[in-house]
Structures are given as C-alpha cells and as structure tokens.
Amino acid sequence: MRLSIRHVTTYTYDQPVHYALQQLRLIPRSGHGQTVLDWRSTITGGTKQVSFDDQFVNHTELVRVDPGATRIEIVSEGTVEVEDRHGIIGTHKGFAPLWLFEAPTQMTTPGPALRALARQVKAEHGEEDTLAQLHALSAQILSQVRYEPGRTDSDTPAETALVAGHGVCQDHAQIMIAAARLLGHPARYISGYLMMNDRVDQDASHAWCEVWTETLGWVGFDVSNGISPDARYVRVATGRCYRDAAPIMGIRQGPGDEHLQVSLQVQQ
Image (cartoon, rainbow, N blue to C red; front, side, top):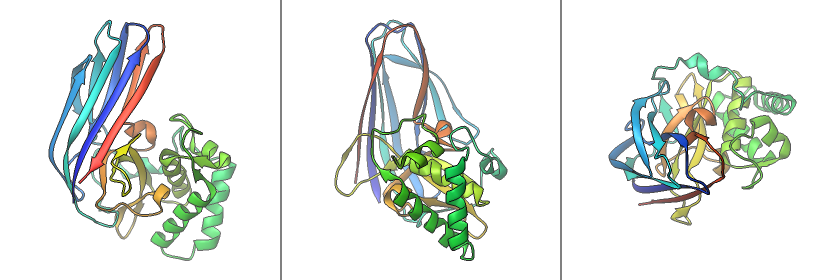
C-alpha cells in the first residue's frame, strides 16, 4: 500500500522568541516492510542546525527558532510504500542493546496498578504462548483504559493513566510497555502514522508499541485499535517510551505563551 503523508506543525508565540530549539523526529526510515519513496521537510521561521541518527537510529534534526520570530511552521511530507507483515518486525538491530528495553523509565515506572495488571494477565494467561499472552494484555488494557482525548498529556506516566482509566494511544502504548516488561519481555515505544478508514484529516500522529518475543523478534501491538500494525501504519521513531520517540520536543527561553496547532493528512 502506498501512503501519502503531510504533517504540519505550527507554533505561534504571543511575544517574539529570544531563544528556542526544537528536536524533530519526523522522518521515517526504509526497512521492516516499508520503503520511503520520497520525503521532504520545510521550516518557516526557523533554521536547521544539525541532522543525525540518535541511539535508537531515529532520523533526528535540531531546529533553532529564528530570534524575534512569533511563528514557526514545520512541514514534513512524503510517500511511503508499506507491506502488511502482521506486526512482525523481526530481529533486533541498532545501537541500543536489547536489555535497554527491559528497564523502566520515568514514564513507564510500574506502581501498584501496573503490577496488579501484570499479575492478572500472568495468572489468566501464563500457560499460553507469548503472543497469546500479549494479545490478552493488549485487550485487557483497552478494557480498563478507555480512549478519551484531552484527559492526559505528554507528561502523564503509564501508572497515572491506568489508575485514571482513560487516555490516548500514547498512554495505551506506555501501559503495555510497562506491563510487558513486568512479564519479562523487552518492549519499546513507536511513534508514526496510521491511515484511518473513516477520515483523511487527523489531529495528531499515532503511537503503538513493540514487544520482543523469542520466536518472532519484535512484534507490534496497537492497543488503541486492538490489532497488530498492518499496511496502514508507517513507523517513524522508536525508543524506550514517548520521550525517546516524540515527534517534536524543545526548549524555549523568554516570557510569553505558545500555541501549538497540528494538521495531518494520511491517505492512499
């Protein structure tokens, strides 16, 4: 399946910017069942400083907001050919060792609720094969944490979202990552794009997780949609949790407020 993607991120500031630096992970890589046919990015109101591959082999760019700017627009767009591999990514590659994905991060540190979830799934499905156990975990998370935008944010830890009982794809992914690690499986966070069946325009990019299995290697799980990723999914960045794979993160010095607007289209 050939997907066309256009992702526009706009920051506006109510006062001219003294200094701001944005870290972008918006460029997908070819491999694991996807081929980037063309990709380009355009920055208005900022200047690219450096490009590099980080420790998780994510294409990363640093952009400085032009001094005195009150608006920066980041346009990332292109075409990607994707095949359906039923969520199977396969062998582990990259600079980061497999054991790095076994340890909790600040966003995925387990508390009582996550430990109880892992114990429940292990008690009910511990004798099943690994894939069956992980699919059961995904389904249990979705039943306990309803998809509800606006109730969590990018700084909400997995434990907090699980206790609250609501969240979005980021929360679902981080809850499953934390629980899978408690069950003894390395797990990682994926940010990317999903072509939705009922719309072209979207408000944000998507997130899911991948869990390591002895038989198949890395396997993807989209808790929010109750499936493993198929040909509608484009992988962009990976990491231990959201903070390692966030599409855009940054710092800013000076007074005033900023407003974020995201426009995203994913279509054939």
